[in-house]
Length: 495
Image 1 (cartoon, rainbow, N blue to C red):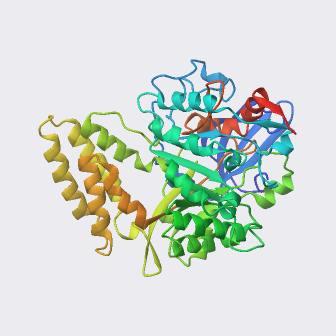
Image 2 (cartoon, rainbow, N blue to C red):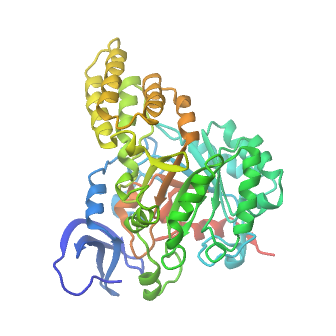
Image 3 (cartoon, rainbow, N blue to C red):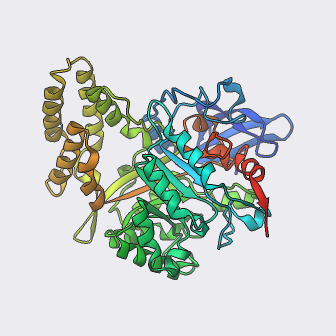
């Protein structure tokens, strides 16, 4: 998957990457050629490598403008020289983001055997299943982060529903103060046991992340089970996010259908989180060439397959919301969560379903103008005295509404919820907004071929491990692959 012959290359930025063969850390360049973005490096032992990074250079530049470097943890786990990144992990003094979402692998046992999955006891030959006390220690470490404790945890695997103590683990997470407790599952047990979803809800689960690869039997071999699981979750009033792994040539033609399916089931489905396939195992050049799909390509598929109902320009990178955190921090004087993920890790938007039509949030308010105005208002708050801050904020929010509204249809309702949240710092007022909105997002996790060390340093999705370390997602599952080291260290024989 090299650069096409001919054409002039433009250097966009420099970073570090890995040799996909020996995994040595190498100097790398991100370059544009014929409208696409590639990441290039040369290994002294294995030669030159060039792999597709983003399919659209213009989109890459638009997202690059949203880049924000965070300040990381005030209590990092490891103090080290940046030259050792991405090896010698634990969230260190050089890491630029706090934990926004923690992952905890509850087991590597699974009741499926998917070809693209990297978490499977049968393939490993051993069982990884941390004890309840080990999980408690992991969660406690996450909640001890400063300046802001980790707000959300997702229990994953393997298949976490195979653990008999899952409900107690969920209750534990809620008792420790996690605002969001999520479960990543294939849904088989949810489909088989009508009461299981209700028990999850009663234990305090916030959201089920359901692996859902398509709306046909050709793309989703467990579709019948998925539909039954969704129905059982609907009865329990338990929110669901669909998580499709997108592989070019396999299910990318159903991306629009997945969005429509979610919209048709808005009463139970809270969002769709697309995951472009990552090649974490052995992959041939032909596999990468044929199956790789990038974030801009998924955005194009959404626009084309929804016939323009949701457009490519409706999406924004994760750090676009940093100005909101800065505003609340300036207003309250209290440290806030800052979504300083790398600007090229993902994309997201919200849409509303009205009269069977999908209406993106961009049709209701001018999102770019909103973020610009919030930044200006934050500057005003920073120079205001304690007494006058509230009046500055209230007047600023009123002016914001007049300057960014696009449509009265739903816009006023949305703005009322958002304005209350910004002024009162009580985000309960946004619950109704979330309940009536559909999140559409995607996160492209890296592999050894498109590995960018700069992205690792800004990762905000961290795995907690039994030895007490927190590890960025893309060093846990690719690159150094700490997952295998952790699992083996805390394993027992597979029977």
